[in-house]
Figure 1 (cartoon, rainbow, N blue to C red):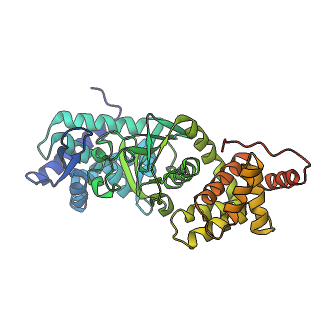
Figure 2 (cartoon, one colour):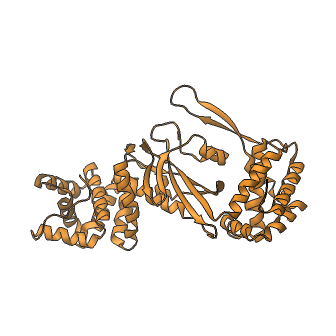
Figure 3 (cartoon, rainbow, N blue to C red):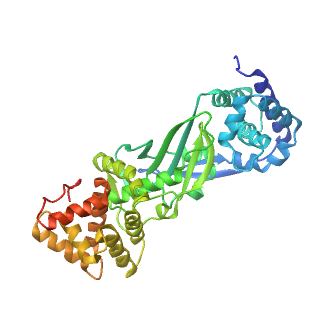
Length: 403
């Protein structure tokens, strides 16, 4: 087989052979993984914890002469430097980045394919082919996965910008992260509302040094899903990130997105998925509208609060959204005009919103008002339109969603 960089192939092979010789006879630790099935008994699998074991030996392996030779060869290859910068952490020297992002993952891949420290030429050839493709490719394939709870889907639902909700594939996370079992939500993979992942897929330019802010983007997706479905949805608590089909890092998700609120699980259909996709994009409006941002924050915090703090957060969210300096009464009337089709319905909405205790009806009205405001795109203009409706100067503003 012809290699694009024969000198790198040889030096990486020499390093892996030296590492195998140094660790020959070592006993790899294993993770005991359970794969629940909907019908019948669970299936169990032993997964060797190769990456953790090899990383524990990194200091010793770094001192091998063959490691130094491989790093020297990689330093002379511009593609390797670009690749290492894309994968390395802050504070890594160039040599450390090359060792950690190329030498170590190559060794891990060979050990995994060999089933331990018994050398197999074909295992190295397959591992090297993957690293060469990554080094000299024109783009980086980036994927971030977060377990999702409180939601079920029948098929993949697109949320835009490379983000989707889809059913989890058995073993897809633990295959790359054998230690993932302790990082999953309780009962993930068992219950019908714990069988999905939130996925972010991007193709990065080969020269890009920074991966996307997966934690921030996936947290926005959780907020959009909560707004659309009113379900007790959460993701994480961590995000599993990979680059070029290799583990990159495990990052914490924002706490407000990783905590499951009280309530019932729900199902996401394609229609509500399209609305959630629109909302996720429109959440950036809150960056420039301080009152809208405060309303969103207080509404989402109310999902986790106990009484009387929950009712206080709901009222404050409504006042920030539609108060416009006129207080709770005016905010309630504006919300009722926006959400209610008939006089009786509007009267009930006002009564619910002005009640000392924000019941389910009030909480749902504020949620719907937030959705309508985001879909409208201009909160101050919407408030002005509602004022004109109250004065009989214009019809009620069109709503984006049915009640």
